[in-house]
Image: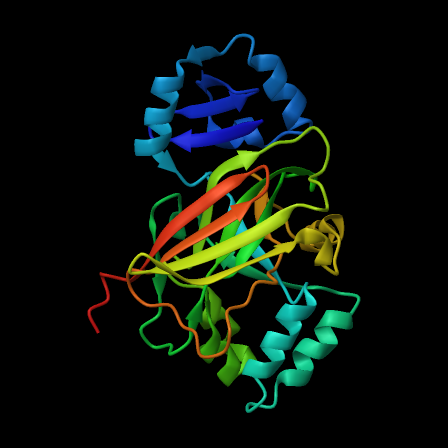
Length: 286
């Protein structure tokens, strides 16, 4: 089943049927056994026609986030380790990424407050002070306040590789800025954990042409989802739950950088496609 957040309300897609839920988003998703709860309340929910549901999802969909922070994991795939090592070779930081890939403790970092998160068909931003900007498609966990994984969504962890490559201590500036994170189009809530053969695909289009396309299965990830969530919750409380991006293995080739008006399509099996346009932050004139 899937949950969509819209400007009108919360839409539940259950078995191809649509329902409008009149509930608070944060209270609704932050519970144990979310799948079973949604199955139960669907019997009392207001049904929506296919036409009404599709119109709302086309015109009013927003990011599936309320008061949740967004965090991210790094260097969870071998290809990501290699890319980080390549970009930081000149600064002497390559060994940092090699060591973290094999370390017991994962790399976890804060990514975004909810008001900076882009949703479906919204713009993501690239930094004007970076010469090398890329998207990072990531399966993203929704973890409730008790540390239990309840749902999944598509995430885009936008990254300024030239800034992080210059010095690893610049990671916060490379990763945290307006619209540097995107989530959507929905929350996917399966009865059992997501299948390890799930495929992540990314397509980048420029002037209507595909300029990058690749895919990977999540079983190539070195870390377990429960391992990442356990480390995140060791010394942090999240009263409304938390989103955790789990790392990327789809890395555009060296020399590729995003430009304004590029379109990024990230598709994850069973969840759907997150679509975003690339822009500079219009509020920053210089």
